[in-house]
Length: 201
Image (cartoon, rainbow, N blue to C red; front, side, top):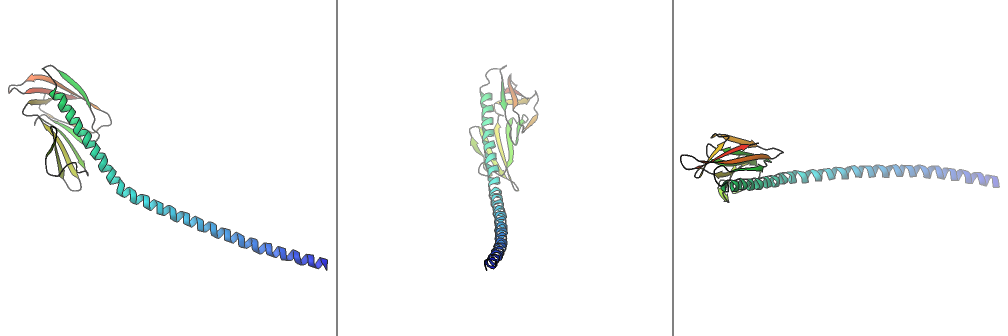
């Protein structure tokens, strides 16, 4: 009697463990699979959200960077103008560092002008209208898909600009390192204008 009871209990317990253990493994696999799928879905959603944010933010960041470059370039032209206006007597020379992060600087000695020009998505000023920031003329022109911003200081009334002794046009492009702009006062020409000779290194 005791033996039968013992065997009965043994088989019952073995059967119970077998079936309960099998169900537990299946439930665990189900839960693991569900967690993995949810993780993948949430990761994909996160990537989509990041992509949407970047697609909106990147153009705005680029516009802000261009705005900063244009402000720095306006300041650079003002500094050159201050150097020119304080040159003093013939024979004096000034050397200054200039940085071109984007766009280009044109030493237009044929037209007696300093010109900085840059293509950008940024509307630096009201399009089609010349405005002034000190001596700097600012003009924003709307083109197809972008704007061209031109910063100009004219010197034709007072100075005769030259590059390496000639009435040439020198274009200075963007560079990771600073340029050295040398300006020297070489006295007056036949019209009484002060000759300013410039070189770039």
